[in-house]
Length: 638
Image (tube, rainbow, N blue to C red; front, side, top):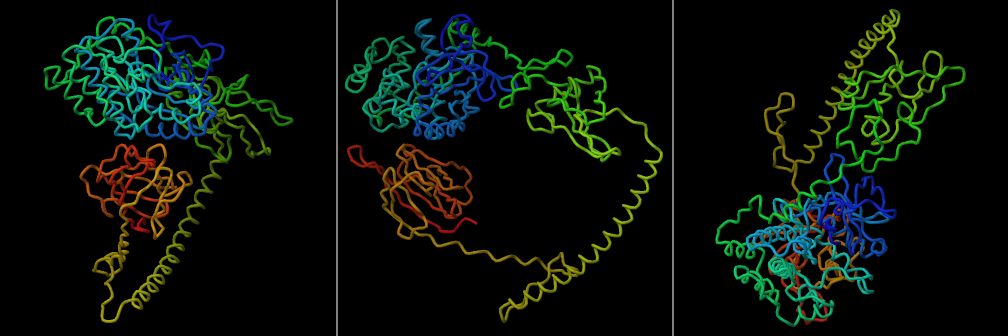
């Protein structure tokens, strides 16, 4: 999906009105405009309840019907929600299980790099260096979350006033799993693929570095490095021919040529890319000015910053205080009734023989505004109906007022008064003058309760005290009987009456003995069960296994409560280290691993394991497997 940028020009072209086939809401988000469409689906503008603009990306129904796409999409969204970088658009909400999957990202007011270059031409060298350095920082965070972007291209890079934003990371991986990609639906732009990606070989973070070099060439020349034309022709040139770098400025030549190396091992790392940008800029630190973009491109940012205001639905009543942007949208709130009564919920008919109750007059606007801003829950007494606001107050407080839950109408209450059961709509009753007789009776009742309460507390104290002595005696006798011969029993603790010693420490279970297994070849699509004394790979990757090597290229802790921790390079794993680590995840991509890297595994069945990665099968091997050493501590989880 190309992201948030459909067209360039005026605000009317950027923010397109909703068409007849566009939804008005997505999971409670009110849609204000359409931002664009792409191979993955459509993108809409909406707002959070606090008034922040978001881009809602609705996946095409064809993809939602593919079970493998949904599985991969859910995993990628889960990983993407951990990406919190300065140069990425964070994923803030998603639904991967609904009839039509969607995700919401922060709205970035700026054109895509593709739109900016098409409209205004190539960028100056200084802007390109700042662009590539920011994208490299974004890739550092994305790769750190275990994600390979796979579709890094100019339309997935947005130009904001304070730097670039990389979007749509990980979505192409989910699309690769669907049957649609084999039936004429193309995900990704061939002009910005890497050779290994075009040849169908293993994709790694170095794949994104190749795409980064292509983006740099496009931004500085206005044309793809491997030309344009049919997808087959472009892919052939990417795999077998050299790029056309004749128009690349001299200061960018080393950066672009190294990123476009055919062999992934010859490409620079993310850190080296940033260093190359600094060297080309003749500065040790890249400093991003506010006007880092050419003036025409900056003007496009201004157009996109003027996003349409959220439409209040339903509109507030005329007598209620005006709600701010935070009240404009209420995700997941149900629709209001067609004929709303003065209070919550539908009107309730009064009991036979009784006249309908008349709500008290509406408070002054200032009072209503204060109550809407700071709703409180009035106390209930046995002689009065529950007190809830009514009229404009009720509508102002509808999304948060209790009872009824978030956005749900409060129910009519039934209570027993002096004239029998009554059913009323919750509303604040008119104050009644105090009755002398009632006050006297209440005072007598309070006095009686205090007397019985004191008596009850005293009785309970003596009973519990006596029972405590018996329990202490029994425990003391039990401790003496369990004390080995020749050893003194522990002295009473400081909390015991008359005791002066220290509390005895409970016995600590000995750590389980480790079981070591070396040279295991774990094939993709197979799993390990750590309870097995003969630990060996078994067929299957999706059945709540303790550890599986998914064919998607990652290790997966599937058992309920299972989790993984990727230890830092050079960090030595042990039982204590695995017990203390809390950097949990449920899957780790194999392409993030280097020889000797270790992973702590906690299973939902109570075992701990330490996996040491020793290598991967060669590219010409007919089998995709990794070689690992495993140490297992069975039943080591308390």
